[in-house]
Length: 220
Image 1 (cartoon, one colour):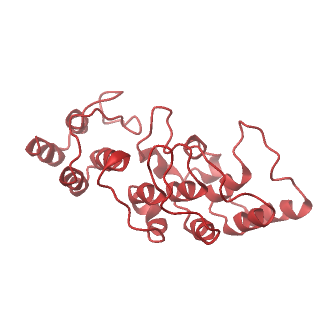
Image 2: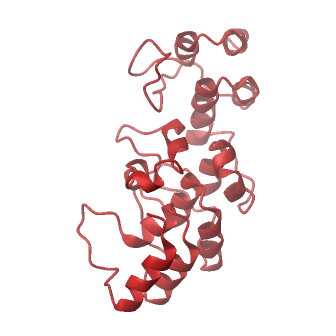
Image 3: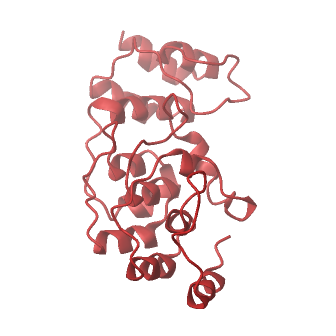
């Protein structure tokens, strides 16, 4: 819920942070999502491994109404076929996606590698770079990401089309994005009259963004 004093009190009472089922999100992941640095630090002191692996669905599936507003921006992230923003990533990937800058600082101090990719090749900085204002503070703590190839380039193109970001689309084109590859919208948009996968050109046409369409057509 984001109630740090209550969480600290429960830890002091002896609640076992390691007791959760495979279907439940680990407390340390929830603490990172809520951006509670004192909780994360305390859990690390109690033996929580900073190297814990995290799957993107634990970030995509919102953990209750109190954090809903904070995490609205995650709907915009491109997702894989399992509806994950990232796969087999680190706690730092979680901090990057959720815009949890204070926890990102704690995790960096704990030794997490900001350049470590998830199993699909995305680093925390790549994710923070396409999160807009919500992830800007996290991005400032991380090395400059390389968005010129791989999943980061596809993510940049898809996110830019969905946002109507002409400069972002042009940046992806300049990096050499493959405009023939079918992409999947990150969410079902009310003003996008189709579902499923489509080429960038069809996706932009469905969005009705003339300037984005012009850039894509010029690029061939």
